[in-house]
Length: 144
Image (cartoon, rainbow, N blue to C red; front, side, top):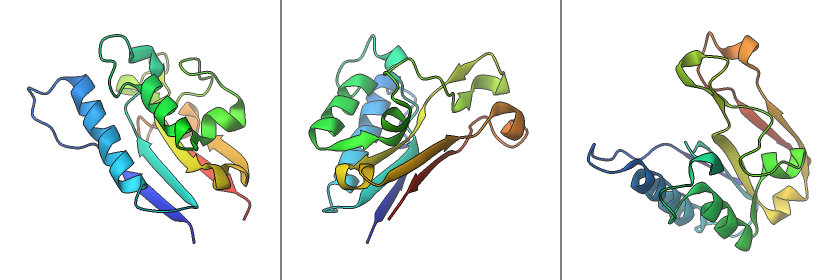
């Protein structure tokens, strides 16, 4: 059995700083993810990337990816494309639907037992999807 976990942003008060909101989202992720023993993957618009790590250390993108890796949970995108944090070549979000305001903030994380079965990660393109959304889909394919 494979457990797929989808997460959405947690509603927070307007007074809550963005870093704290991101930290709350990651806490929810860890709490839900730890309920399952194996064959697990989580997908979400995490609204997070290493390029924004500067001001808030606890729960920022780099530290959370490091915590996940310590638990043998890995980004399928970083593994498949052999990318470095903050230097992603494939954007998943176009701010205000502008092709020049591109970021990678959507992810699929998977347990090590699924990473061994990772076959492909596909990122949608701006031209094909911008009329439908400011995000492109992240499609992760495992060979089971």
